[in-house]
Image 1 (cartoon, rainbow, N blue to C red):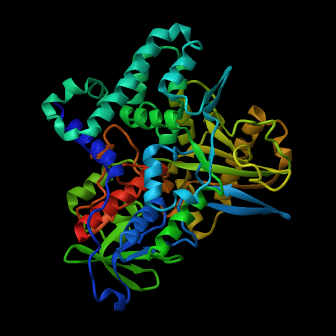
Image 2: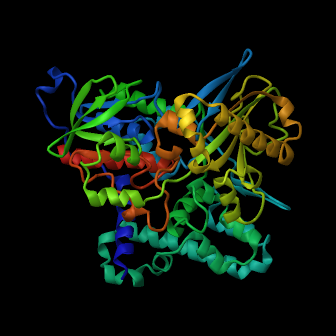
Image 3: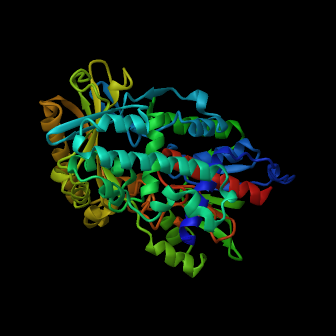
Length: 544
């Protein structure tokens, strides 16, 4: 038995069981707390979804909670901002395209947080709409794994046997996972391979290896790995079971957008937190985590104010926490060495376009992904190299999902491409110092490429319709979220960095916890909300 893999599966089970976990204890009684200024049970650094989730859980369970955010609004990546074009105002969505918010587990979590009834969802009609050279594919929402198989079999008759084996394995992996997570302690490590043979078979495989073992047709391979970009990795590096399980859930539950943009979710969480007694301070940047005898006991803000607490929870990026806020000699040396081996996920380039025409009839699919070729490895490599001419990108037409998203008679489009921080590193010093001429020129060049590709592949005449345009890069991400390297998914979910091998939310520094995509279970809306709950569980059990 591979003990490392068994520990990974144990962590999967723990994450699964976390969804149904309920806090049965009580917040600590502190007679002095109402009269002690700047003293709390818990302080959370950063108001992204992980920080908001953790703060809301804590406040709703009676813990005296302070959430500090350096930006002027909550949300982190789950936010939006307005841009004007004359008298017209367009909303620019920062991150959300679709999320499986209506799945049973996600709905339960949002209900616990007191925000489910505050959200109005717009379901996507397709799970994916993909455009490859010479062929297109539209996968209906809630089609399920078996429905997806039935859709592909007539398209690739030469791969019928391989597709059937692959989809049978996929279903079996999901069944094994469900059975294991339902009662993980019932299986001794030595019996794991026999009881859960399909999970065992893919324990050290990437999704690329798994697909290539069953499928030869390049088009079919491309279709089966087309959503790897949503995990920030190419098929050759993305852990197979990390891909199969959430993708299977997405195919079953479908994806939803949030009316009012992702900011509506962030604002609802903030309201739930403060209604329960939590305190949120915006425009308050944390400069340092205060320690005493090796324990985190509070924070110091950029203006010199100090706030003390029994627990400090970081929604900030792990590199920022351990390299800047904490001080290099506080965390154990072996822990710092381990962090140094982990790879951050890439950032993104986003182009927001406000059009002076309603294009929903011309572009009826809310989200479409365009691939320059069938080689997903080459597509990913091009994006990382800043070669957007040969990289894949996605296009979101928000008015297809939310009528009235744009001003009357107008449309809003978002173009997104993954982007490596390495490409933007030469512009970093000038950007941070306010000398942005070279940076702006490069951002404009890549923006023009994406607009030209969208005009050529999807909407002739697009460039003449544009009345508002803006764009972001990994440096933008760094500036507004402080996420190291402009990363959008925290540490990348490679085969050696998922579940048990990811850094835990409870750090080796007493009193210090993580609640972000950099910890467990990882990135994405579900991942960071769950990370917030895990941090709450760790803190609540330690303090109650």
